[in-house]
Length: 170
Image (cartoon, rainbow, N blue to C red; front, side):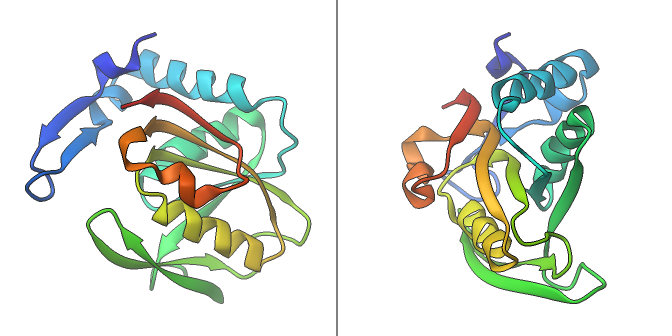
């Protein structure tokens, strides 16, 4: 399936010069959304995975249904102040700003194999921070899967040694 046909590109959002890839036009079509999740699952199904982790918020849209389809648990990586228990946190740079991510201290046990799922790989900052948080808890990152990759931003270079799968590349 040509998933690009189902992803709307919005110029100058959230700021001038950004061409935002809007996945809501994909996710609001149940058959296309299910197909995308299934195609990602097919690409990673041979990996040994104990948990899937996804960064807030669109990582939840990809990671949670992927985890359910594989019979695995899902670990939300949230922005600061959103998780109620004890957390580990890390600062990071966004594609267009700065923020902080957190994970519950008990979300991942040492040695668990974790796949990261998100909607978009851009500069790699969010995912590098997610990897850092998982490793702080003793988890092993076995790969990362994305609906979209912005290849021209070279986010892969920040994820050295991580096996990456992207369904669509711009």
